[in-house]
Image 1 (tube, rainbow, N blue to C red):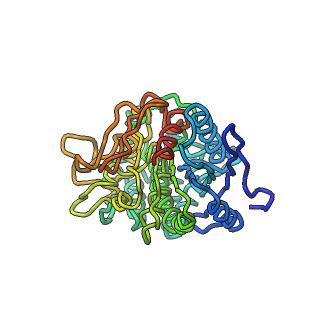
Image 2 (cartoon, one colour):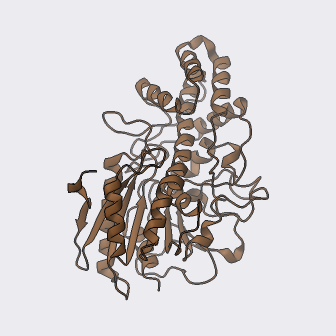
Length: 433
């Protein structure tokens, strides 16, 4: 990032100017904007509060920075309406950018699980080459090119994709187990049957939010078409693992430098960006002092990420509950089609499990942003229905560690998370004494 873009911009409000820094990380978590990082750490030393926002999958650079602009616009509005904290308030804003999009085509649109040009599929196979042997990629390409392989080719390709490496830093806490090609084909069939047309307004999630997904004709079974869709679901898993690496290896060390300045640090994540910020908090030495607050907007995580026990082990982000001063606030929405209808199918592998079963409840593969937090003790969780409107109080005092919020009234899709009400959730955390 060139010096003339450090900081990225200065937001001027009626209350106080706020510099915005962009922190760029590559797919392995390496900081690729070192000058911006050093300037940020210097600015944090003079700030009272640092807000760090991490975008999710399917956001290119322009989409990510636009998301941050929209969210901070809403934050400015509720600041003007409800006022800053009753203490000294000199904020610094940070937008994290990471390579969360498999396909960067000329139009820079994200992957569409239920369709897309052949060139897109070729690009997704190229992306999977990072985690598959060249011979495996070549075999899948050959299967796709030969319609005569039929269901035999489908099962062979599924067996290859079922053994995709699993990132050990998984929020479920469950160990990986060998892949099952037959079970994966069944997963693809269920996902295909579950996709429905749903109007959305903004991109940025597990699937392209501004491209409606149509119900396929399941009567005309086409093995190669099912494989094409399965490959796209495989990239969902790949981006999930990447988000964990970016957070643990990249944002984590940065986070510890920022909290060491003495500024109160507030983390915000959207979709897989929630995995970025939680991995930053949970892996490595505990931040000293603690992170002040965490706000998770439609998190694409296991619903049991904070569970006390997942098959005898704690959920993978359980440790975050002790590393964040305030209760973690997490939203869900019934309008979030990717997290309520696709996520639990796309990520069906042992390492993505929450628990062996959620008795009488949702799928054990369910998403946090789809069904809310699961597996917590009653004293640890406060569930708020519906999401508090601007000015209404959040339950941020007490012994509980998580606040689950039903945002169905205000969050119309997976990608539409920037509004006055989500900004108010953050401001409520900032205003806590």
